[in-house]
Length: 89
Image 1 (cartoon, rainbow, N blue to C red):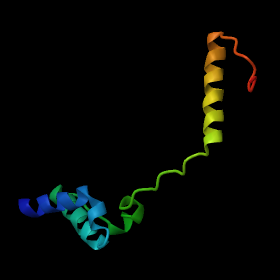
Image 2 (image 1 turned 120 degrees about the vertical axis):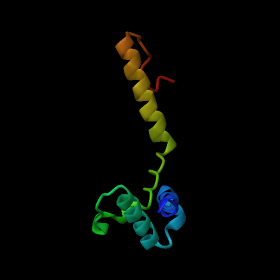
Image 3 (image 1 turned 30 degrees about the horizontal axis):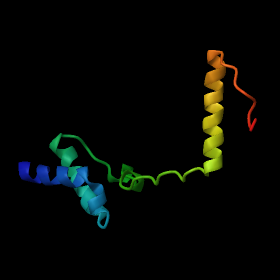
Image 4 (image 1 turned 45 degrees about the horizontal axis):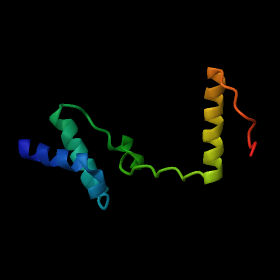
């Protein structure tokens, strides 16, 4: 039983290696729960638990520079610094 639980733990800890067969991941998850004496409802295991969400698309550089500049200006204003007007150059 310990050997089965160890194999199940390896499968559950790296789901990205077993995406080709989600039933294998589900069986491993059920084995882990059974080893703890807990029940398991496979209907509650959704695909988003198996696949990571994609990273957000990066902002265009102009938007990033504007956002960072606004943040720096707001902190400087809170500290009492007088900065030249925006786009003074």
